[in-house]
Length: 255
Image (cartoon, rainbow, N blue to C red; front, side, top):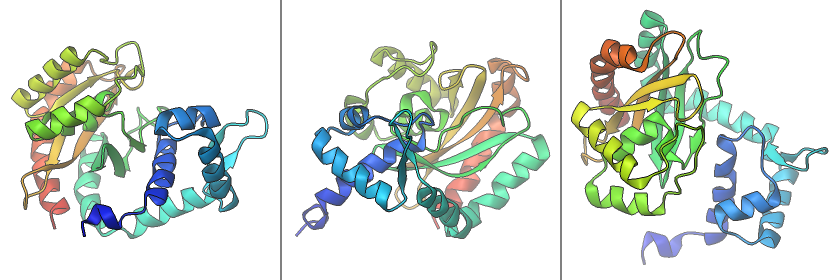
Protein backbone atom coordinates (compact mmCIF):
# COMPACT_ATOMS: atom_id res chain seq x y z
CA UNK A 1 0.00 0.00 0.00
CA UNK A 2 1.41 3.41 -0.96
CA UNK A 3 1.84 6.37 1.38
CA UNK A 4 -0.89 8.15 -0.55
CA UNK A 5 -3.31 5.29 0.19
CA UNK A 6 -2.62 5.77 3.88
CA UNK A 7 -3.17 9.54 3.80
CA UNK A 8 -6.28 11.25 5.18
CA UNK A 9 -7.99 13.32 2.49
CA UNK A 10 -10.16 15.00 5.13
CA UNK A 11 -7.11 16.13 7.07
CA UNK A 12 -5.38 17.22 3.87
CA UNK A 13 -8.32 19.47 2.97
CA UNK A 14 -8.27 21.05 6.40
CA UNK A 15 -4.54 21.71 6.18
CA UNK A 16 -4.96 23.32 2.75
CA UNK A 17 -7.40 25.75 4.36
CA UNK A 18 -5.00 26.59 7.18
CA UNK A 19 -2.20 27.10 4.64
CA UNK A 20 -4.09 30.07 3.22
CA UNK A 21 -3.75 32.11 6.37
CA UNK A 22 0.02 32.51 6.48
CA UNK A 23 0.16 35.41 4.09
CA UNK A 24 -3.11 37.35 4.18
CA UNK A 25 -3.53 39.80 7.04
CA UNK A 26 -7.01 40.83 5.85
CA UNK A 27 -8.35 37.29 6.17
CA UNK A 28 -10.81 35.46 3.94
CA UNK A 29 -14.55 35.07 3.50
CA UNK A 30 -16.08 31.60 3.13
CA UNK A 31 -16.43 32.12 -0.61
CA UNK A 32 -12.80 33.15 -0.97
CA UNK A 33 -11.60 30.12 0.99
CA UNK A 34 -13.76 27.79 -1.09
CA UNK A 35 -12.45 29.31 -4.30
CA UNK A 36 -8.80 29.14 -3.28
CA UNK A 37 -8.80 25.51 -2.08
CA UNK A 38 -11.41 24.07 -4.43
CA UNK A 39 -13.77 22.82 -1.72
CA UNK A 40 -17.51 23.58 -1.64
CA UNK A 41 -18.73 26.26 0.79
CA UNK A 42 -20.71 23.81 2.94
CA UNK A 43 -17.60 21.76 3.66
CA UNK A 44 -15.49 24.87 4.16
CA UNK A 45 -18.02 26.14 6.70
CA UNK A 46 -17.63 22.96 8.76
CA UNK A 47 -13.86 23.13 8.61
CA UNK A 48 -13.54 26.79 9.61
CA UNK A 49 -16.10 26.43 12.40
CA UNK A 50 -14.07 23.57 13.83
CA UNK A 51 -10.87 25.58 13.55
CA UNK A 52 -12.55 28.52 15.28
CA UNK A 53 -13.80 26.32 18.12
CA UNK A 54 -10.25 24.98 18.57
CA UNK A 55 -8.71 28.45 18.49
CA UNK A 56 -6.73 28.04 15.26
CA UNK A 57 -8.91 30.58 13.44
CA UNK A 58 -11.19 33.41 14.51
CA UNK A 59 -13.95 35.31 12.74
CA UNK A 60 -14.00 39.09 12.73
CA UNK A 61 -17.43 40.16 14.01
CA UNK A 62 -17.58 43.21 11.75
CA UNK A 63 -16.15 41.96 8.44
CA UNK A 64 -17.12 38.28 8.95
CA UNK A 65 -13.71 37.36 7.56
CA UNK A 66 -11.68 34.54 9.07
CA UNK A 67 -8.19 35.20 10.38
CA UNK A 68 -5.51 33.33 12.31
CA UNK A 69 -6.39 32.57 15.91
CA UNK A 70 -4.30 32.68 19.07
CA UNK A 71 -3.71 28.93 19.13
CA UNK A 72 -2.17 28.93 15.66
CA UNK A 73 0.11 31.82 16.61
CA UNK A 74 1.18 30.06 19.80
CA UNK A 75 1.86 26.84 17.91
CA UNK A 76 3.94 28.68 15.29
CA UNK A 77 5.97 30.42 18.00
CA UNK A 78 6.55 27.14 19.85
CA UNK A 79 7.67 25.33 16.70
CA UNK A 80 10.04 28.14 15.80
CA UNK A 81 11.68 28.18 19.22
CA UNK A 82 12.06 24.39 19.50
CA UNK A 83 12.75 23.34 15.91
CA UNK A 84 16.07 21.59 15.33
CA UNK A 85 16.14 23.14 11.86
CA UNK A 86 15.79 26.64 13.28
CA UNK A 87 18.51 25.91 15.83
CA UNK A 88 20.88 25.01 12.99
CA UNK A 89 19.87 27.88 10.69
CA UNK A 90 19.79 30.66 13.30
CA UNK A 91 23.57 31.21 13.84
CA UNK A 92 24.28 31.57 10.10
CA UNK A 93 21.40 33.98 9.53
CA UNK A 94 22.06 35.98 12.68
CA UNK A 95 25.69 36.52 11.69
CA UNK A 96 24.63 37.99 8.33
CA UNK A 97 21.97 40.16 9.94
CA UNK A 98 24.29 41.51 12.59
CA UNK A 99 27.15 42.19 10.18
CA UNK A 100 25.20 43.91 7.40
CA UNK A 101 21.84 44.82 8.98
CA UNK A 102 20.13 42.78 6.26
CA UNK A 103 16.65 41.30 6.30
CA UNK A 104 17.08 37.53 5.80
CA UNK A 105 14.34 34.96 5.16
CA UNK A 106 14.84 31.19 5.03
CA UNK A 107 11.96 29.24 3.49
CA UNK A 108 11.44 25.49 3.03
CA UNK A 109 9.30 23.88 0.33
CA UNK A 110 6.45 21.56 1.27
CA UNK A 111 4.15 20.45 -1.51
CA UNK A 112 3.48 23.42 -3.78
CA UNK A 113 4.12 26.03 -1.08
CA UNK A 114 7.11 27.65 0.58
CA UNK A 115 7.05 28.14 4.35
CA UNK A 116 9.12 30.56 6.40
CA UNK A 117 11.27 28.80 9.00
CA UNK A 118 13.45 31.68 10.16
CA UNK A 119 13.61 35.44 9.66
CA UNK A 120 15.70 38.38 10.81
CA UNK A 121 14.29 41.79 9.92
CA UNK A 122 16.43 44.83 9.22
CA UNK A 123 15.65 48.35 10.33
CA UNK A 124 14.36 49.36 6.90
CA UNK A 125 12.01 46.39 6.37
CA UNK A 126 10.16 46.26 9.70
CA UNK A 127 7.27 48.33 8.39
CA UNK A 128 6.65 45.93 5.49
CA UNK A 129 4.39 42.91 5.43
CA UNK A 130 6.49 39.78 4.74
CA UNK A 131 5.49 36.27 3.76
CA UNK A 132 4.92 33.46 6.25
CA UNK A 133 3.62 30.71 4.01
CA UNK A 134 2.51 30.88 0.40
CA UNK A 135 1.83 28.77 -2.68
CA UNK A 136 2.21 31.89 -4.85
CA UNK A 137 5.87 31.21 -5.55
CA UNK A 138 6.02 33.56 -8.55
CA UNK A 139 5.99 36.78 -6.52
CA UNK A 140 8.29 35.70 -3.67
CA UNK A 141 12.05 35.91 -4.03
CA UNK A 142 12.69 32.59 -2.27
CA UNK A 143 9.82 31.02 -4.22
CA UNK A 144 11.26 32.16 -7.55
CA UNK A 145 14.70 30.84 -6.60
CA UNK A 146 13.22 27.46 -5.72
CA UNK A 147 11.20 27.36 -8.95
CA UNK A 148 14.19 28.28 -11.07
CA UNK A 149 16.41 25.48 -9.80
CA UNK A 150 13.89 22.64 -9.68
CA UNK A 151 14.42 19.71 -12.01
CA UNK A 152 12.82 20.68 -15.35
CA UNK A 153 9.96 18.17 -15.18
CA UNK A 154 9.07 19.15 -11.62
CA UNK A 155 9.23 22.85 -12.50
CA UNK A 156 6.97 22.47 -15.53
CA UNK A 157 4.44 20.45 -13.53
CA UNK A 158 4.35 23.06 -10.77
CA UNK A 159 4.13 25.91 -13.27
CA UNK A 160 1.07 24.23 -14.78
CA UNK A 161 -0.60 24.26 -11.36
CA UNK A 162 0.47 27.78 -10.46
CA UNK A 163 -2.04 30.62 -10.78
CA UNK A 164 -0.08 33.76 -11.63
CA UNK A 165 -2.06 36.15 -9.45
CA UNK A 166 -0.84 39.76 -9.35
CA UNK A 167 0.30 41.07 -5.97
CA UNK A 168 1.55 44.45 -7.18
CA UNK A 169 1.63 46.15 -10.57
CA UNK A 170 5.13 44.69 -11.03
CA UNK A 171 4.20 41.06 -10.34
CA UNK A 172 5.04 38.84 -13.31
CA UNK A 173 1.78 37.25 -14.47
CA UNK A 174 2.77 36.19 -18.00
CA UNK A 175 4.02 32.56 -18.10
CA UNK A 176 6.57 33.27 -20.83
CA UNK A 177 7.96 36.26 -18.95
CA UNK A 178 8.21 34.20 -15.77
CA UNK A 179 10.04 31.41 -17.61
CA UNK A 180 12.50 33.98 -18.95
CA UNK A 181 13.00 35.35 -15.44
CA UNK A 182 13.67 31.85 -14.08
CA UNK A 183 16.17 31.17 -16.87
CA UNK A 184 18.01 34.37 -15.93
CA UNK A 185 18.04 33.25 -12.29
CA UNK A 186 19.70 29.96 -13.25
CA UNK A 187 22.37 31.89 -15.16
CA UNK A 188 23.05 34.24 -12.23
CA UNK A 189 22.73 31.64 -9.46
CA UNK A 190 20.02 33.65 -7.71
CA UNK A 191 16.60 35.17 -8.40
CA UNK A 192 15.53 38.81 -8.28
CA UNK A 193 12.32 40.28 -6.92
CA UNK A 194 11.75 43.89 -7.96
CA UNK A 195 8.77 45.11 -5.90
CA UNK A 196 6.69 42.13 -7.04
CA UNK A 197 5.41 41.27 -3.56
CA UNK A 198 5.25 44.67 -1.85
CA UNK A 199 5.81 48.12 -3.42
CA UNK A 200 9.11 49.55 -2.20
CA UNK A 201 10.55 46.14 -1.23
CA UNK A 202 13.20 44.39 -3.34
CA UNK A 203 14.97 41.09 -2.77
CA UNK A 204 17.47 38.59 -4.11
CA UNK A 205 17.21 34.89 -3.31
CA UNK A 206 19.27 31.74 -3.81
CA UNK A 207 18.05 28.13 -3.74
CA UNK A 208 18.69 25.65 -0.95
CA UNK A 209 19.46 22.08 -1.99
CA UNK A 210 19.39 18.74 -0.24
CA UNK A 211 22.96 17.44 -0.30
CA UNK A 212 21.52 13.92 -0.20
CA UNK A 213 19.25 14.12 -3.25
CA UNK A 214 20.51 17.22 -5.06
CA UNK A 215 16.96 18.55 -5.25
CA UNK A 216 15.76 22.02 -4.28
CA UNK A 217 14.29 22.14 -0.77
CA UNK A 218 13.82 25.89 -0.28
CA UNK A 219 15.41 29.29 -0.63
CA UNK A 220 17.12 32.08 1.28
CA UNK A 221 16.55 35.74 0.48
CA UNK A 222 18.01 39.12 1.34
CA UNK A 223 15.37 41.88 1.37
CA UNK A 224 15.74 45.65 1.46
CA UNK A 225 13.89 48.80 0.48
CA UNK A 226 14.18 50.97 -2.62
CA UNK A 227 15.08 53.85 -0.29
CA UNK A 228 18.25 52.03 0.73
CA UNK A 229 19.37 50.39 -2.53
CA UNK A 230 18.45 50.17 -6.18
CA UNK A 231 17.84 46.66 -7.48
CA UNK A 232 21.16 46.71 -9.32
CA UNK A 233 23.14 48.07 -6.36
CA UNK A 234 21.67 45.43 -4.05
CA UNK A 235 22.41 42.63 -6.48
CA UNK A 236 26.01 43.71 -7.10
CA UNK A 237 26.79 44.19 -3.42
CA UNK A 238 25.23 41.02 -2.02
CA UNK A 239 24.61 38.51 -4.84
CA UNK A 240 27.83 36.51 -4.47
CA UNK A 241 27.61 36.62 -0.68
CA UNK A 242 24.03 35.30 -0.82
CA UNK A 243 25.08 32.32 -2.95
CA UNK A 244 27.79 31.40 -0.43
CA UNK A 245 25.30 31.64 2.44
CA UNK A 246 22.90 29.38 0.52
CA UNK A 247 25.64 26.73 0.25
CA UNK A 248 26.21 26.84 4.02
CA UNK A 249 22.47 26.67 4.74
CA UNK A 250 22.07 23.76 2.32
CA UNK A 251 24.52 21.76 4.42
CA UNK A 252 22.49 22.58 7.53
CA UNK A 253 19.05 21.74 6.12
CA UNK A 254 20.44 18.42 4.82
CA UNK A 255 21.42 17.20 8.31
